[in-house]
Length: 216
Image (cartoon, rainbow, N blue to C red):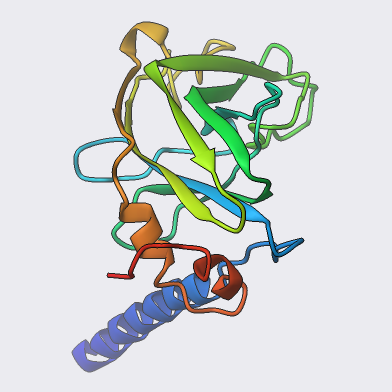
């Protein structure tokens, strides 16, 4: 019986490890739409242990980045990379000036949620049940993106508390309490670029050719 339990435990561990490896290997990204296409990335963590931000069906964080025309740049989010927090990336952006103004927090107001509908995490899609909070940095980070470049805004520590969270009962229980939000910026951090340079699948190859960093 003990041998069987040990074998089952080993099997579960192997499945877990292979699952993580598959996720890492299968990390998808759009291919460059042109030879001049560029990518913006950044890393965000929730604590000093580099745990990623919580982004679930009811609440989520995303970078608040604007282009030269003041349009918000949508980012995709990944939480599966080893030795990194939450990985945000925006492929196929063109060269120009981009400004990280802060972070957007989008939460579900249950008073606005249609009956029977399960909310989803969509920080760049307007839904009637979503409320957008914008938390500005003390100093915006301006990045001059060149053509055919993968560049990073750096790394950001975002600390916060919800009004109620999962145990809460109010409609705004997933709202981030504005008084609790603290953002520590490190625009010079290159960790995210070094980590993604190590992604070897075919999807990332053209983007990593544009990445000036060396993989760990």
